[in-house]
Length: 513
Image 1 (tube, rainbow, N blue to C red):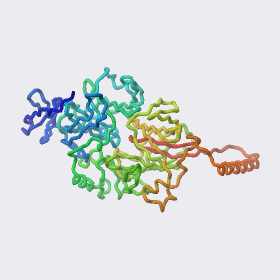
Image 2: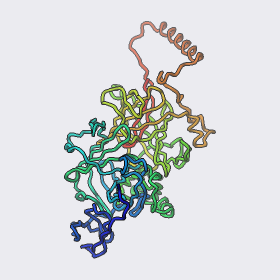
Image 3: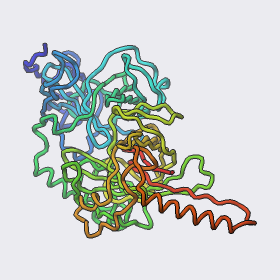
Image 4: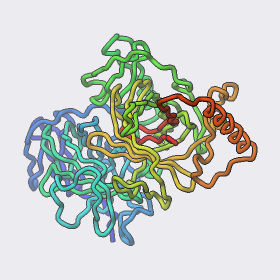
């Protein structure tokens, strides 16, 4: 039975500056002095200085040290498990990976154990320490591998190199600052996330699932005044010097409204700002800042990107294009609205990994079967606005798209270096998209192919009028072909649909029928 008794707090003077350093968790072995950033290790009743920690960069997260909350009551673990326990955020670690930076927060539970609240594709994953069988070396867990953990199948969704760049507060363990180590992340079909940190010996394992901040009953977050101040924060474009306003606390990249350069924010506004110039700007059909209503909530357009794709094995290199709008709601996170020639889609990154074997045509996710429709190489051509990952022109991913056999969903797999991301969603009627943004007067500009079942998927049927029209067209073609005797060569027509997705945040979907 978990005890709710308060933990004993241990305080000792910092060996570097003499200021008090506090340990609230008996499991914490390291702490960072809030005054001089000395890294201290606790040995019994004595603190020893082992170096100096770089200051955390301001990622403008709504979380902060001292914020408290409560685990969802239905958290896995059975009777006497962690569900419903209160927790306090006591530490933060910031990591640099191959695709940008992210943060993990150390949460002290009321029974004295700890949990981790980490960023995950614009959302959060709450994890608890896990134990089990002896772990294989990281080279035996390549990207895309399916393996069993305690009889449950998991897929390796990330295999990358990372390094600790900054920390604050108290920490159960501490990887050497600036030294690369391997991180492997596995995901199950029902949304579980298993993270293996090879930066220590033995490797540290965390097991958890996606959570919404609103479900954690958080208190002590940065107040509304701080949020308003952050919303107005500005920087000077490193390319042209024009002022650039950054609206979101989670943005890792943005674009300059004056010269359209892409600015990398992953090192924080106080860090080095890198930029990449863009040419031939594209004006989005839905302006940045617009608010649309989907799923009973208001979503603001904060980012836009144009992408192109080329199907795998297409010798003619015929490309197709589509556009993605990144939508944001403070309580629900991010979703994607995708504008493709075959229709509109509303999709979101999947926490779990659908069941699928490379080279096969079927995938299973949340009790639904999906069939492969296309494989293609996708490239980002133009971006505008803000994004929760470091985006840039020329980013290339390998995509595979699937359509539900019952016609009620779409699924995509997108692979970038070191990471595989799945997305899932639904098609939308074009009139509903225009209405959601109160742009009914411009509904004609939103019109695309019908959002209903395509190519027989889902059991849709053709109307009598459509059949008559098809018969007439075929008859005309037969007459024309009969009058073209003696001609040589051949021609073909391939209908290229669009796709949807987000780099390290979603996949893509296209129908080539």
